[in-house]
Amino acid sequence: MPNQQQVQQTYARLNGEVFANRLPKIMVVFDDLSDSDVVGCWDPSTKRIYLDKALSPRQRQAVLLHEMLHVEQWYQRGRCNHGWFFQKRCKQIKRLHGLFVG
Image (cartoon, rainbow, N blue to C red):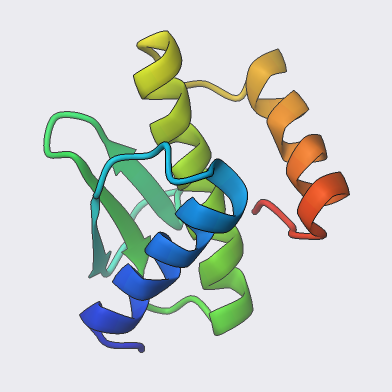
């Protein structure tokens, strides 16, 4: 599991590369999510992204990017879902940056 500083650096790098630094600073927290049906979660009430600590580095980046899209949705649209806006952004990120959104 990477340390807190590494994951915050990854968030900052992706924020710059993919979101042109439009996203606010968000705390990314590792947690044991094995009892849930998710491997990542954006919580607008705490302004935190939770990632399952069991994720591999490749999975971690994909899930972090997925949750960052939810942050973008929240600040642009006031809600989060996996609808057309989310799907469109996933395809756009893949096309423009070659990154997979998990």
